Structures are given as C-alpha cells and as structure tokens.
Length: 161
Image (cartoon, rainbow, N blue to C red; front, side, top):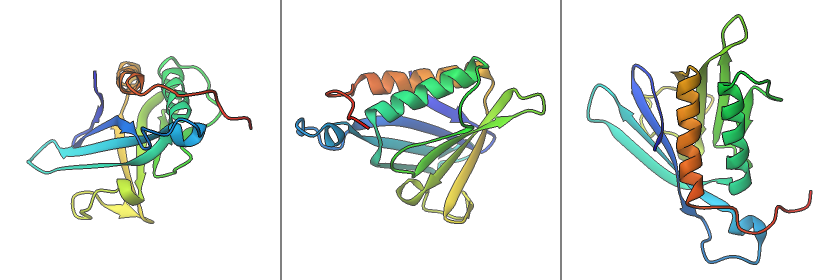
C-alpha cells in the first residue's frame, strides 16, 4: 500500500526511504531519524520529481499517522496542522463550513520543494498542494504511511522530555 494523494494536477507519494543513520543505535534520536521520500508527478504529462532527505523521527511519523486517522474518523484534534522537528513537510486539515475535513494541504519547504516554479508555484519559499480527502482517502493515506513506517520501526525508548 502506498501513501498517495491525487488532485487534478498532481499525484503525491510520501514514503519512508530508510533510517538516516542505520548503524547508530546508542543515540535514540539519531537512531530514529527517518529519510523521507517525496515523489510528485504530473497527472497530465511525463513530468516527475523525487527527493529523499531526513524529515522526521519515527515517533513523530507515528503521531502524524494517528493525527490523520483521527481526522478521517471525525475525531477532534489538538491542532489543525501537523509538522515534524524538521519542518520541511507540514500537513494541514482543510475543513468544510460544517467542520468536516474535506481536504489536506501539504506544505513543502527547502529540500522537499520541487525544482520548477512554473509547474508548482511557491509563495514565501513554500509549495502548497491541496488535495480532496474524504475519510476513505485520509485512511488510505494514513495506512500507506503506516505500512512504510512498519519497515523502519522505532529503535529504543522515547527520550525523556
């Protein structure tokens, strides 16, 4: 199962590509940094772009999956946006006037920005892609992320805060 979102212009795929430091086990944060792969493809042509970079900790991605699942189930969430320690990818719920989630905005910054400004406009050094996400689409996206994360589970206990 893949974590994909599609709108009238693009298909976005988000996946875990691996641990940033696969051989580090003695530092819980370094051991749990994930390399995130973002792929963006035009639905009307042959244009495709992909990037991999460190983007989230294992437990942050697990929290994001729960946030997406809560949105898909109509449960209240503490925040309408979800971002990671490395703030280059951020998700934002788009709600209908009645309060139901109808979409998801995906904000991409820095290394996760597509290279062309013509196909993917940016504002304030940020690309924002909006997707229609009824509950089944949100559940499928969360499920794809969960399947991807399952290949790279949390290593060690959560650090004390």
